[in-house]
Image (tube, rainbow, N blue to C red; front, top):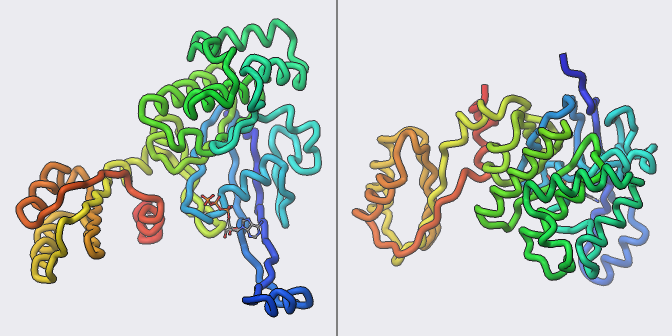
Length: 338
Ligand SMILES: Nc1ncnc2c1ncn2[C@@H]1O[C@H](COP(=O)(O)OP(=O)(O)OP(=O)(O)O)[C@@H](O)[C@H]1O
């Protein structure tokens, strides 16, 4: 039986926030105000993660993901509850703890902006007191996987977002940490580089048995990397289970966003809705020239959706997306994963 490397019990983070008043006079009154409200950013969550597991930590904006990750990485102190990561209490033992974890935050780099990539790696080698053998072995492995050495002489500033992300991920694994926190690693990247990033994470996880906590709004990341999904909303866990089950329910949903050429009258909207009503789990929203259709590909393929629309209304542009997190959450509350 595998032993948990991360144990989280009844974890809470409440923020006390001043109810601010408007205007200059309001700002002055705020100085003497006692009018506070409590925001329950994380509200009593429990979960365990086994060594080598990759879990997808998901939720809509404001759900409490970042706050949880900040507590797990020791940046924030919890209001209540316990966190144990590989025997460390992250906040109280932060100095020792940071040597045992790696972090990658999609929007920021942990590498030095103005110096060649190789120099950043050498600085990290010194910080983590890596032996020459361990350093060379890891660099050679990164070279085999993604050809990292071709980036070595460039400054981080001059790399593309995708190249920088590959270097950041490799850097996070350089000191063989027990746990890696990856926050939106593929945000803003194109499909080809996303696939490269997923490949790199998977290979590193397999080689080092590193436990990975991944937050992402991209279901493709989750599908290709995570065996397990933890879904959080309003500070509470609302699903903790296999990605496979999650995918069976949500994986084949798509959202079609259409820009209409002209407004559609009520009669026509009703007539399109009647067509959709013949297919299960299909929904349509219309707002001026924007039409949004959510459908399940098993019930009705995209080509059929477009064909129906083309026969009814005029449009020149459309975009297909995976199901957005807000819709996933609504459906979970409606019992989709029961
Ligand atoms: N320092 C803070 N002070 C007050 N409220 C905060 C603070 N940080 C976060 N919050 C609130 O806590 C809640 C959870 O925020 P959090 O950033 O953890 O969500 P998230 O799931 O990471 O969202 P996103 O995907 O948008 O980053 C939100 O309501 C947010 O406004």
